[in-house]
Amino acid sequence: MTQAHVPTDWHPASWQSRHAAQQPVYRDRAHLESVLAQLSHLPPIVTTWEVENLKSQLAKAQRGEAFLLQGGDCAESFEECTSDNVVQKLKILLQMSLVMLVGLKKPIIRVGRMAGQYAKPRSADYETNDGVSLPSYRGDTINRPGFTPTDREPDPTLMLRGYERAALTLNFVRSLIDGGFADLHHPENWDLAFVGKSALATEYHKLVQSVSDSLEFFEAISGEPMHETHRVEFFTSHEGLHLPYEQAQTRFLPHRQRWYNLTTHYPWIGMRTADLNGAHVEYFRGVANPMGVKIGTSISDEHLQQLVHVLNPHNEPGRLTLITRFGAKNVNTHLPRVIRAVRATGASVLWVCDPMHGNTETTAEGYKTRRFDNIRAELRSAFRIHQEQGSTLGGVHLELTGENVTECMGGARGLKESDLARAYKSQVDPRLNYEQAMEIAMLIGGRLRTHD
Ligand code: PEP
Ligand code: CO
Image 1 (tube, rainbow, N blue to C red):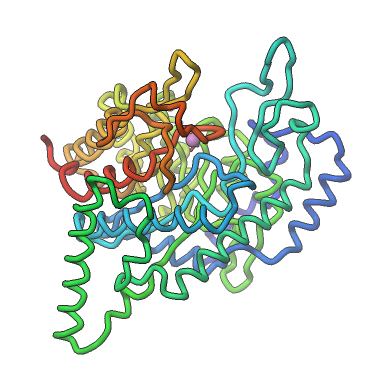
Image 2: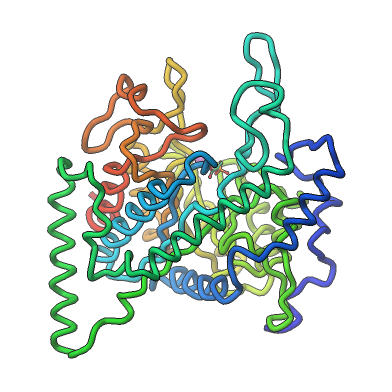
């Protein structure tokens, strides 16, 4: 890499001279500084080899030669950092990737919203209940969900606890994968106990059988095991929201002559923090990680073109992902517009569809939910529109869980509004449950790509 890739007017703290949206206010500055000093001395969660490997795979997705599956919780919680939870999330992502691999016939890049997805943007700084106003809950690395002044006080120590849990999560994922859990020869490892009864299970097991058969076939004719398929790779991502945390693990790697954020492989900038002059864009333009930006209906063509220019001035392949989240109602109007706007810059990006965040609604009883039909409709439109525009949809960004929750309505089991109360667990956005997530994977692998 040449020196030209490092902006000369940038350093890891240069964002501090810009307006930083969505940040908590810490009362005890000395405590904050001491935590950040500790954080910056800890070993990193990821390495630059992995980060650069992911970037080259994302470059393939950008060219239509691979497909990105990015998924996980809206927000991870400390309480749910358990072996069961990590295994379940890994299982659902592995199962989905297998279904998509067979259907799309291209490599699937697996990325969890995992191992560090702990900070959340909020629409209001304060939450008011029965006349009492307290700071909003901003995710487990910032404050606590309970509605008391102590719970809602931003606590710097939580950043250390979050960093440790991110490391524990990724350590367990790596061990599972290295130990053979993700070996394509043994997809039975990924079965989830309650799935047996599901209608989708039969279809999935048929598919698994056909994968095992083809593996055996290839190995029989080549006389060798398929090493490539033994090693499934898995990457992490989180919203790069809480800038002091992100800055603390930003390092200059002399052998690469570039700065990296080593808290995660693949951070993204949320829709609410993508201001051109804001602190988030300033921070992220200087790090070499591949990165995403969420794109909603309110973005103008000029803003988007500037973002592409500022975040990827050298048009580096795999560097910039645009994650569109317009909603089923608006995707037809806005997606062709933003594809054309980016094309006019001459730069290449990876286009990913997030069919979740533009389709959120609140029921009369106050549940935040999403309709499966809207999620499917936005995804289907995204595939169609990219094709019509001569562009490529290179991935999907989903909020999902391997558990049997009832947070989104619809899907094969036809979950209704009255079902939501049964197993609604999310503190923030509603996730696809296991069956709904598998249904989306099957749709991507099959019918969704056609125009029906
Ligand atoms: C999210 O991904 O959880 C999120 C808040 O998304 P967006 O920035 O697109 O609203
Ligand atoms: Co969300």
